[in-house]
Image (cartoon, rainbow, N blue to C red; front, side, top):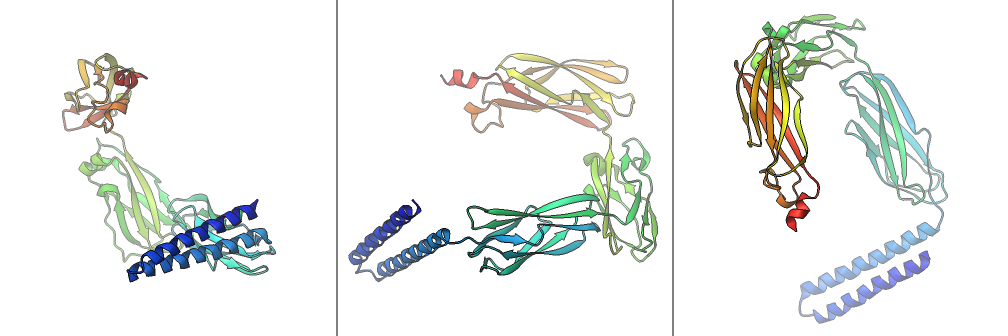
Length: 378
């Protein structure tokens, strides 16, 4: 069957050559056309030659890749450290081994292949460079070796490592408050686990919400730093991390996550509507509470698209009870819709502003009743 297909392929290619040859005779007046036809003939001949070569290789003996080991464990490594390993292999088949490409599953692993074609009995290697993450813990990454072989088109290699931080951090996470001075941020102690002295070479934080004064010239086995919080910037980015760059030989950087509790919360946190119909009203109930158990006042409530409206507002101790109506717009009329006739969802945002400057946004998402679009189109 393969030979029949191959013969038909050769016949098709030579038919193309005949057509190209005829075109060449008709275009003798143009030297540019002649050169194009000649080039096309050469390319077609090259295709025929390559097809014949591949057919012979497929019918002949196969190459087979055999690795000395398909896995390697780097063991314990420092954060952001680089480790290298070489996977050695041999063509144990009777035919030529052809490797298409070597692919890593992430940017932290970089494989390098010595060459792509190997004769029977020939040896080769794939060099792998692994860059560890900042976060501690065990990890496993794969390197995929793609072969020009129908029976075994892919071979997977695995590298493992455990990222160990040689610097102790206390506390490991910063829990902040919007109602305390300096957000209630505690001092942070950094100490060397192996007795290796180090210095602080830089500090940065998400949204520049936290800053720290330090002297890069001081070398010690322990540091106590005093983070300063910008409250306005913290309100814009309640969650983030504090990155501390170090000169420790095995721990070049550490990460301390931070999080602040919002001043207010709404329960439920979003409004979801199912089986919505254009023009029909669906009522929902929302509760607005203080996360710091304090008295507060709502200054205003608005809706971005006016699909959601507040029909009643009642204060009960340190919380508010809201009754809202949601009126679904005409199918496809939502301003976010690109294909109006097929748009089956509408969205809106309820904005609650409090005295003092805080605000909370409540997302509303509505799903139309099935079949509405089809009925409308008919």
